[in-house]
Image 1 (cartoon, rainbow, N blue to C red):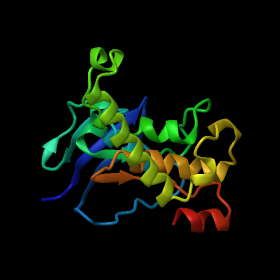
Image 2 (tube, helix red, strand yellow):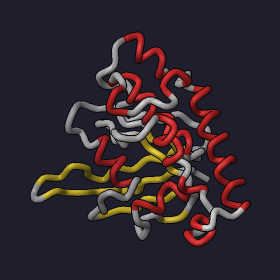
Image 3 (cartoon, helix red, strand yellow):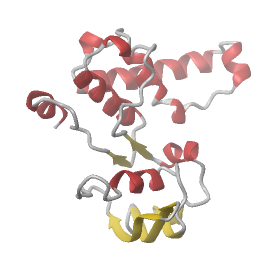
Image 4 (cartoon, rainbow, N blue to C red):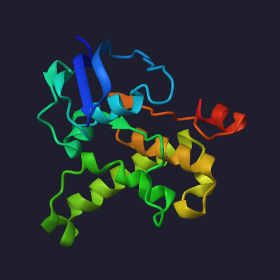
Length: 191
C-alpha cells in the first residue's frame, strides 16, 4: 500500500487553476520529488496534503484513508510533517523550544495534569526534551540550542525548521524547497 496517494486532484483560486488532475503515489521509504518551475503548483500540492486548502476535485489518501475530512492540526498526528518555502518558526522562542513545539502531537497529558505538574507530566516532558535533543545532535545545532530564532542566520533557521519537522517523527516528511536561499555550504549541511 502507498503511504501517500493523490488521485486526480484539482484546485483553482478564483478563475486560475493551480493544480489540475494531479495523480501520484509515494511508497514507504521512497524519496519522491515534485519538480517544476515557479508557479507550477508544487507548494500548493504540499498545502493540499497539509490540509491548508481543499481541492475542488479528486482525493488525497494517507495510508489508504482519505484525509480530505481532516483539519490541518490533525495532519501531524497522522504522521505527516512539513517544512515551508518561507520559514515558519517562532521568532521569540529558542531553537530547543521550537523543536519541542514539533513534539506537541506526541503529548498525552491534559491541561489539569499539566497545571498540577503531576509525575506523569514531568516524565513526558523529559521524553520530549530527549527527543528534541536527539534532533539537535543529529543536525549539529548544539551551539544554537538556547538561541532565539530571531538572532540566527537564515541558513541555521532553515535547519531548525527541518529539525522541527523531524521532531514530529513523521512517517512522511514534506520538504518545500529546503535549500532555497542557502549558500552551497549550507545546502551541503541540509543534505
